[in-house]
Length: 212
Ligand code: SF4
Image (cartoon, rainbow, N blue to C red; front, side, top):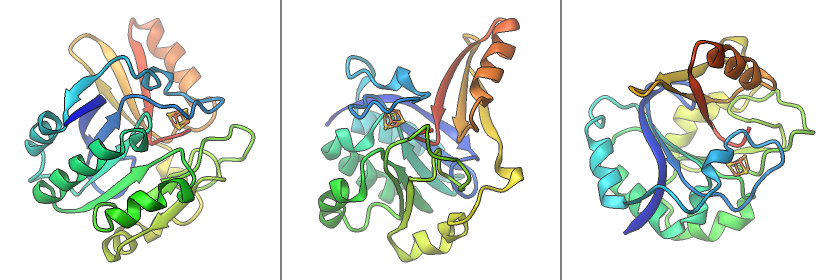
C-alpha cells in the first residue's frame, strides 16, 4: 500500500520509554498555529510503500523497546497506518505509542476497528496559548490515552508533569550535515538550537514528539 513518509529513525529515546523506533508520517491537514514541523505538512513528498517502511524498521526490531508514530498526521493516512501497525506488531515486541493532532472522538472509530494496534495515544492539536507542563505533551490540552494493558504498564508513568531530566531532545546528524531533532521541545528551545547550529553550518529539521 502507498504511504507518505517523512522519516524513520532508531534509537529515539525522548518519545516514550526505552530505545524506540520513530516513524514520522508525511502530510498534515490540521496545520496548528505554532507547529514546529511545517516540513511535514505537504502531501507532495515522501511517497513510499508500507512494505518498504516495514522492511526498513525490521533491521532495528530486535533492539527496540517500542515504536512511536508521529508526523505529520498519521490519521490522515488511516489505511496505511493500520497496515503499517499490523506489520509492526508482527516484527517488533514492545509498546506502540501514536501521536495525533485530532481529538479522540475523531479517531475512535479507527481504534474500534483496530483494537490491538495502539497501546497509547496522545491526542489533540498543539495550542501555543496553552501552558506546557505535562510529559509527552507539547501543550497541556493534549491528552494521553492508555488503551491496552501493555500501554498502562509502560506509559502510565507519563500521566504526570514533565520532569527536568526529560527536557531533552534526540539529535541525529545525517551524512549531508542535516540535523534532525526528535522529542518534545520546550518553547523557544528550537529557535535557540537552530541559531546555534546554523552558526556552525548545519541545517536543522524538526520532528517533535509531536504537535509541539
Ligand atoms: S503540530 Fe502536529 S497536528 Fe499540528 S500542524 Fe504540526 S504536525 Fe500537524
